[in-house]
Amino acid sequence: MTTIQVVNGQNEVRNEAGFQVIGSIAPNQEGLSPKELLEAALGLCISISLQKVLARDEVEVNVDEIEIQVTTSKDEGITNRFVRFDVTVQFPSQLDNSYKEKLIAVIERACTIGNTLKNDVVINTVEKR
Image: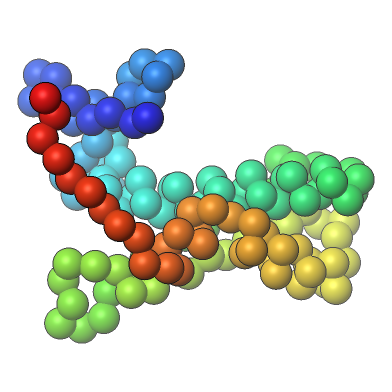
């Protein structure tokens, strides 16, 4: 479970381990904005999926070379939702191109966040009692 709590005027994002990050109201400020947290969730899911597939395939690589960049965008005239997520993956240098193509297909299917974003979901908002 993730909890957002306002403390001294700042949105604090917490998990069950405690305080993790400040939530900001706009991108590129102290803390992470909702847009940046959404991008981070997708990027982290892709990174974890990639590392799990490499481990499953027993491919030894320098995982420090892995970098995931996620950019969201809206269409003109659409202000209240993102319509596109562009994900760029930097693979470890020793992987060949055919294996990289296979990895992209596998990690897209494996990432729960990506699969959620690609499909309709139900959001149920209720008052805490």
